[in-house]
Image (cartoon, rainbow, N blue to C red; front, side, top):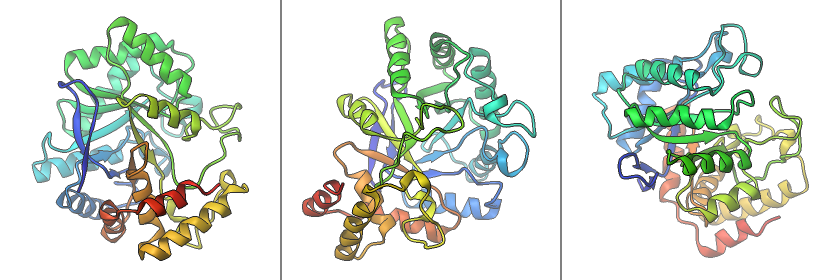
Length: 328
């Protein structure tokens, strides 16, 4: 395994593995026995960065979520796992009542909601301190300064370490960071967005914004992270739900554009040269890029996880990386 630092403050920064394990479906579509086996294998391979959320996976149960955090909490207790493993969780997109969704009835990012969500996540995870807590989605009803203050109060109390943000417009991230800096408060240091080798369209409206999709890495976000080495970028859905390697997983409409076949051709060439799978080449490309990325991979079996773990040791040559980077 390889590692990198996230965060800059000696009191909160962490050394984490360059491959993060997503636990979204643990406790729902992935049963507890299988979830434990995947977690055990990940840690055995040197993995130290596990990702979840307080709303995972309410859409499979009709509830409010929390199943994933509870499974991780029981696994931690049964294995005696301590602070050596960085557990990252998110808040802000948990429905306030069963049978509803986060769009029309989400908890939001007020200081009160942040405090309640963090306390509940710590209880489910069995932790006194959350090493990394993300703002999961935007909350237009709460001023950014209030959200900044809400997160900062938990850092000051020692119940939260690093702060992260996911699925926000880049300008809102920068504005929140500027507000925090001006007040001498902790800033978002970890950004989690959807990112892969194939480039997604960002102009299509989604459930949260008629202006387009803003949870996707684009040139604006990449240039932001490149310009500020203190920021860490975590990429969710890097393998497109299996679409790179499975014919029964078609690419979505956000990938229906002229650049996709060009990039797929370049990817196929590098796959043939390396003898690795397309998934492994994509993960290696992300990990070793000019803007380093921590891919966040899901797994429903140990075999799936092992395929992703092997990507950590796959070193692309400069020529292979140039071929992938230059495909438009």
